[in-house]
Image (cartoon, rainbow, N blue to C red; front, side):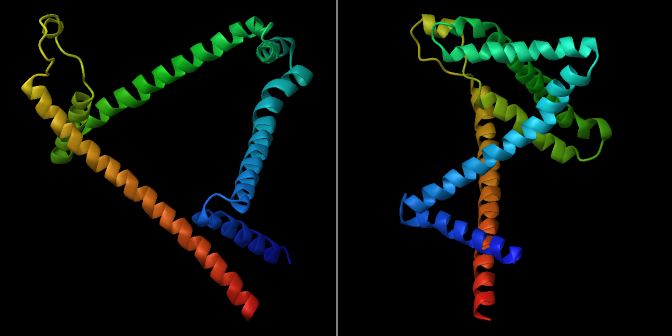
Length: 218
């Protein structure tokens, strides 16, 4: 019985989403609200049981004195953030907001430098260190340098002072052209991957509808 209920519910929600083909309508909005509500509820449950309970509630109730002190700090910061709702008391939330922005910026910059930039440099030099896949490594190196050159927009200061139209050197323009080709190939591959995933999801939903119709008619 439950299998039938979930199958019918899935097909009905699929048809409600497909109704967007005829434009924005009530059924599509209902399906969207259900998706957002379920996603928000699931996120709240995950945050409560995996973040708040083990990192805030349990240390305060069952932890040692040091753990309780450390747990009170984020609790106090969260309480101060609530004052951002009031225009008159919003200044009380500036300190925890500044802390969150600073930590977020540090994590983002550290992740970009150590996780992306240095990782890309290490991956580009790996084939040359190992002696295998030299051609693939050379292509990857050329692509990485070309893409970085494509996003290089600075020009010599003397060109701007003299009134000339700022232009990059010819060798840099050539590298930027190569980087543009690699960017086009990458974006095309990403688009094809998204398109294939979308078609796969569409076929799965169509198959679910046909399966339900076959069971109802059998």
